[in-house]
Amino acid sequence: MIRWFCLLALCALACASLFVGVIDLRSTRPDEVWPLIRDSRFPRTVATLLTGASLAIAGQIMQQIARNRFVEPMTSGTGQSAALGILMTAVLVPAAPIGFKMAMASITALGGSLLFFVIIRRLPPTQPLLVPLVGLIYGGVVGAAVTYVAYQADMLQFIEIWMNGEFSGTLRGRYELLWLAGLAAALSYLVADQFSIIGLGEAVSLNLGLNYAQVVVLGLIMISVVTGLTVVTVGMIPFVGLVVPNLVSQFTGDSLRRSLPMTAMAGAALVLAADLLGRMVIYPFEMPVGTVIGIVGAIVFLWLLYGGSRLAR
Amino acid sequence: MIEIENLSYQIAGHPILSDVSLRLEKGGLVALVGPNGAGKSTLLSLVARLVPLQSGSISIDGLQIGKTADDVLARQLAILPQDLSVASRLTVRDLVGFGRYPYHKGRPRAEDRDRVDAVIGQFELTAIADRQLENLSGGQRQRAFVAMAFAQDTEYLLLDEPLNNLDISASRALMTLLRDLVTAQGRTVVIVVHDINYAAAYADRIIALKQGVVVADGTPREIVNSALLREVFQTGAEVAVVGGRPVVLV
Image (cartoon, rainbow over the protein chains, first blue to last red):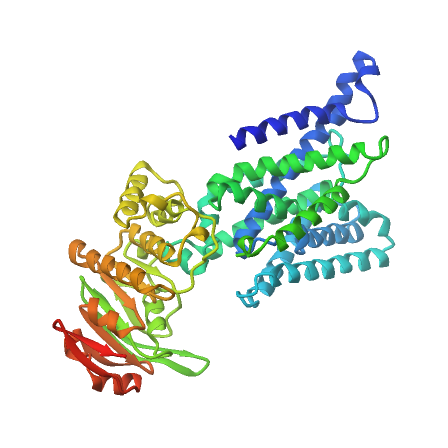
């Protein structure tokens, strides 16, 4: 029931997205409508859907690995590490092709998330809120490193592109990498049970004969690929990976086999809605989607934190 | 049969287990007792390969721990670890279903679902099968975790302090269930338990550990007496015999 409602809302939003923009389709010459949709509106709509779905799934998997509901890649250093990778590439190998940038972003994202998990392993399990706090500080430190490097290299104006996600530059030929992110997220459905089991801890995983380290590394690679590709293509979008899995698990529970499709749909809907809102509030100008979600997400995050111990592991 | 030979284990130079050798035959309910820090949980964790061996050897029906693949062992032996995640939004059915993971590897087949239904019925969890773990009482949740381990269909079932945080009714219900698994189904259950009266009431064999050494080993009638309590637990409680079994007067 709720699944169909979500799907319907998603379709409605996607249709609306095709018709919202500076150029009004009603007063456009008929032969210009199709190129506009093909080159700008459709790529933008697909890009928001793919980004939202894959970021929400990456967040959910990160929460399973961390066994903590308050972490997600963009606020725990993974996104900042990806930005660092892109910046390093831009400084050291300015002529590098996009594929190389993407690979570097994913590799530094993986390194950044591995370090994060090494740090949080030492935290006492009785203090679940320490994990997101350490994540925010860690993300802040990596973000500061990005700013420092950019300042030294006189590239401060560029990092804004990666640090604050937006879709206004999404055109045909410039967003297709996101299909890879979507694919990586979709593949996680094949190992949904494994991710659910590692959420029960290392001992339970070992008891069931599951290779814990292998599943964790697989999850981290998936998170890093999604994060790296998203940051390269549209920039950092915070909170999607945090609020969507939390809200969805209220309805579907923690079995990823059941919750992943809903998480993907709800993430796509959230990012699309935020992008639509960003396109309309100061029309004909735009507000970056990262800013819109930053505001909405921060409020929902606070609500989750104060929403009582029921939500905390 | 579980064969433990010359097992020693240290943490940061402190001996936790010293040269422990034991043979646990198939069938029967074995209770490991002893004061805090005696090495009971470490012994169980070593047998369940949750911590790597340091010296000595353990084999389960001839399969050497440390040399046998995890997924092979997962069909021979199941353990209920001590600290379990309590705030999970998994349903009881999801959890018991994961007990079948060693067989289906993430692709449950019809026979796995049938087995899960059967186990849920056997553990009297049918009424709460679709409720989430975080909304259950401690006793119900513990029962669900034991059901998951049981659904693994292993010869050996190890439980690390399953009675922690359970009231007397839930404790007795769980012990009765374990007793039934042993008597009616011929499973082998090894349990770490704090309360020696539960061990005496339900176990076929009690093994007492103190400072990493086996100090007593036998049936409850043979070994539960005031001398054991004095020597192992350093307490002067009396032991009475009620209905043919020893009872510690606390």
